[in-house]
Amino acid sequence: MTYRLRLFVSDDSSPAQREAAERLFRQALESSLGDAALVLPVHAAWQRLAARHGESPDMEALTVEERMVFETWQLAEAAALQAVFGPHRHLDEGGYEISAID
Image 1 (cartoon, rainbow, N blue to C red):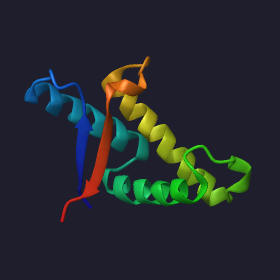
Image 2 (image 1 turned 180 degrees about the horizontal axis):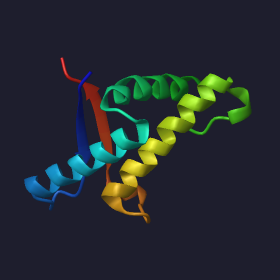
Image 3 (image 1 turned 135 degrees about the vertical axis):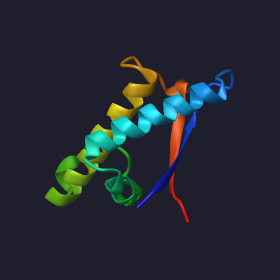
Image 4 (image 1 turned 90 degrees about the horizontal axis):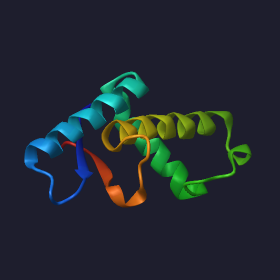
């Protein structure tokens, strides 16, 4: 299953810089999850959990399976963000959007 990734980065970055950043983000995300095919389903599961429990839920309130999905996505996301923005990432440095390719 393929997906579209869009990074929201500084407006002064060139198209080549944006493409390189997106490539780094994808590589780190896919490496952390183990396969590109897992990005969409794990992200979708995380979104459902975050909608139901919030983005910082009481982990004890989650089932073991929910906790595993939540933590798996958080670790993969952190690795991808660090790959692009470095270890001292700040909230104003940009975000991302993941969607299915129809």
